[in-house]
Length: 179
Length: 179
Length: 179
Image (cartoon, rainbow over all chains, first blue to last red; front, side):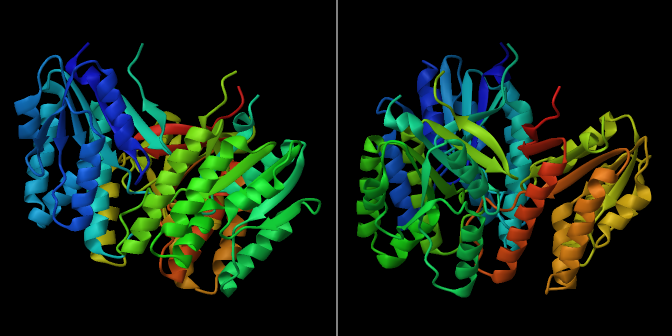
């Protein structure tokens, strides 16, 4: 099995249970798990979400923070026999757009992620929000963000062996490895 | 078959055909049907929607209104040989948030619903809007509502034997009873 | 096989890969393809999208523009041995609502489309945006648009042999022709 055959993209709407599902996938892998957090506690609402997520994770998992330099964090922590759980990619995209509205940083980091993905040893579970099934947003930055998230999901889905959409806590398989 | 094995959660976006699908499920049950309406005609747009939905329902169905006290209404009307059709849970959540922004009423009513569900005799079809697959809303109340809807869907999906996502009038099964 | 048995509705969120999937379906038909564009380059953002889409299409495909009179365009171009690819219906709905806010034009054009559909020879691939799975929009026009899109999708799905939801570039079948 190639490295990429072990990677899974988990998509879902807000409060869809995607993080819980992804954590169950990581736990079920039987591998040592390192949680790669992309969130930044910039306000009280985010701080509360981060703390709630932290309390829900198994105590034995490692933790690394990667609000911007995700590919570098993955390359630093990936190892045979290890599962990296990234939660979530939409926050990472949002951080990159806020850090550099012109998008150069986002383009560079995204390219680095897509380049690194097939070479990473061990297992990778990537969590991201489905944000494209509502009405076109009024403001241009939100449309930009929605476009970037959609393109990223397509590119990642093509590079992962398994893609799952979580709705109401239930997994719907979009792509599975050939048997 | 336990009572819970007869319950179905029907999710779908706006104008997805979820109500029509749920009504067909209730009609196909062969049971006496009571429609549990959660809508309140607070403005002309809502009044028009309520009237349109009323005209589309079979004339022989019973009707009960439960804009807030849903668990009590279900316990009052549930009976062996009866199918209760609740349309819809997102309006009920919205009514609760508008009635008490602090959320105490919502927490109490939601707990009562989840508690009652496994004990209800007969059959239950619950309709709710999928609202979490768009861009993060600008205002905090909308984010709160979206979170509450997502958590409720997860909790209900875990307690129903059947969960269906309706897209363009077509049912996509997310959970089915074991054969 | 009746004409309608050859028609497919392709739904998907923003940047879901629905256009790419639909183009692959059209190319795989082995038929001559005419692309029916509904977009109007009213601003720079739209002009850029139109140009990007144009560059991605095979050079040999025909092109017709139908920002408003879609049924007439389909009847003019449909032929046995030809595949018409309409991208996309949500822009067409939006054009109709902008052209006539009262909705008479929209009602007439939608009725004409639904009427023409089963009679069209050859093959038809219709692309449309799923826009109903987010929070209820603040403004009335957006709610109106969302309702019209949902109703149209239901009506078209009932008239097409194949309905596909594209998520992250991956097709999820909602309806298939009987074998």
